[in-house]
Length: 391
Image (cartoon, rainbow, N blue to C red; front, side, top):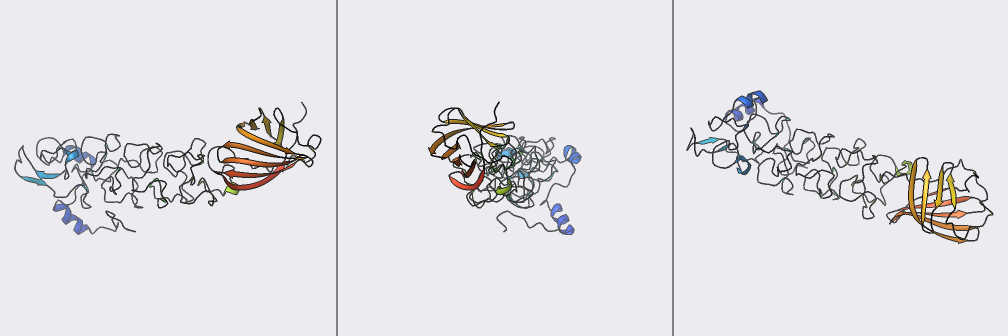
């Protein structure tokens, strides 16, 4: 769907382009070297590339709605209108500061010529169109004629860094890092990152649930990295009880079969929510089943430990705290335990809303396990438990 400011990128008629360029409607055909030594619109001896008032109309470039067009107030062209009559936000304005570099050129690092680099935290209006870069009304942050959410827009803030580059840490150039808690619209397209209508959070033209999208919020951390704690960049940790759509694909985690957007079905994923902690679904059939102790459930388990697999041990360190060790991984839990003859119910809680309920059978050594995430039953499993081997 075409929105306001969006261009239909079709091949340009060369004859028409030449006429437009001759008429001053399009600028930016010079190379970077030519721009550095040429183009002095107001004739004041300062090249446009470094002139903070290119048209000498008395308005600094950063506050001038038409940076490269106006009536010169001093200098050799005093009293004359010089430059074009295109506002900075006009679709036809391709080189806002008339420095010879197209606004969408990787070499153009200060689009509006206000002396602030486009990726400078102090630069709040990259294209100088009077709309703040983080305004919901600003649909083309770098003023290159491409809507920020257009598939053809690969550098939203025009700082020369591709939006999906690992070095691009502020995609929309609003001065907030993409992984900052207060950055609620990473690609600056006017849609909040946690909005159901936001299907490409980082604006890299890859749908958030696409197979090749491995960094949904564009913060240079892979979605399946242990260091990625907020996959969709909405300010809520992935394991926060209030985070109901971890990968920001518009599907509630209770019905989403790929919670963390790593393109692994939750049934085949050892870390469903992408919080860097192994889900540990049990199902270790290598541990033989058999009677546990004398077959009766102990009244309390404080001070005891059990094996939940060949390489996994659960130790009860106090009446309410437990530690699970598997290989080099150690996780801590709070727990409740209720014995009933030869059976017992054990609830291990990692954090509010995330817990596992075990039904233990001390006669057979089998257990069933119900996994809850954000208070929603996500998976059922089973396995074998046993006393640890004698020292």
